[in-house]
Image 1 (tube, helix red, strand yellow):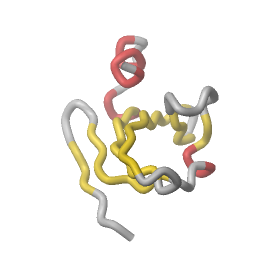
Image 2 (tube, helix red, strand yellow):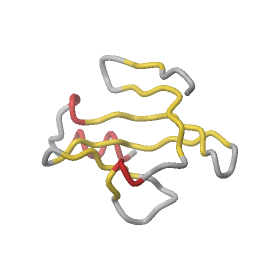
Image 3 (spheres, rainbow, N blue to C red):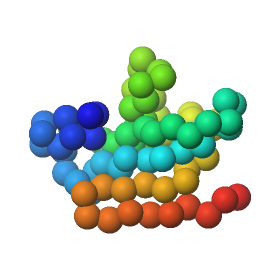
Length: 77
């Protein structure tokens, strides 16, 4: 919903990613929205009430991400 809401507000497809992650603290799958805004990558997460810079998030391991035209698969570290 956040991804589509931001698209409706005028954010470009190149500025948004829906990211499937593994929450390493809880050992479960989860999804977040990543938005590029003012030169920064920001995370919108329904488990956190604030919008936070992506570099502060360390407990999520990305699995794959997608926007409306492409998708990316991440290799495990």
